[in-house]
Image (tube, rainbow, N blue to C red; front, side, top):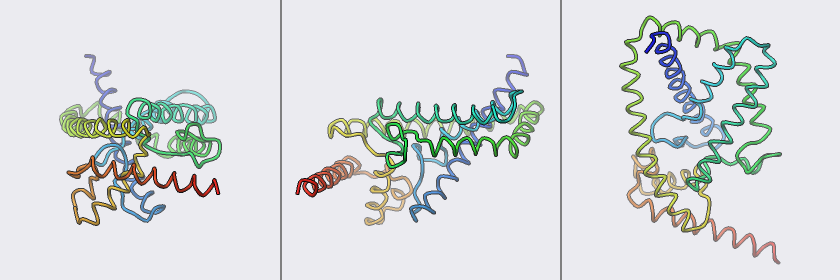
Length: 240
């Protein structure tokens, strides 16, 4: 493989890794501030959110284009919203899992995307363009002279691959349970429920990694029962 192409690939892999880890930190503190709880965010067990990794790669790619900044802002809005929608619909249709829910937001589409967050992505994109693009470009320049770093990058992606396989195994179990319940599983709300239940039982590891609990099936079924009871109570109140 041409060394120039190889260095570009390594550069984008580094950006993906940085984006995924920084996104996890951002989401962790966002949940702490908004929900007043420490909740491990994202689909994976470890400190990584792939959607943010893809987002940073897209941000860099668009920032590197030779077009006016306002055209880049439009591309940020459209492409990041598109990625968010595709990721959301894949999990809903393929795994019966809803990773996030914008149903309460104005103008939302299927609870997956909404105008507010599309604008937020565009603002983040413009901020990236004027503050972080050049430092990230320096990373690409650095990789051209430090290709040996790919060894350590391989270790990072090896760990991510193992985490992904474990998380997919859990997702298959959740998919089976959600299909039986004939419901799409609200992933983050379930995670909050499991964290609270594990906290009651003083299961430290399960509080950090909620889906590692031994009686996962039982707890998920209990969660679905609670959802159905709440829906029934609401229906009864509305019918009075």
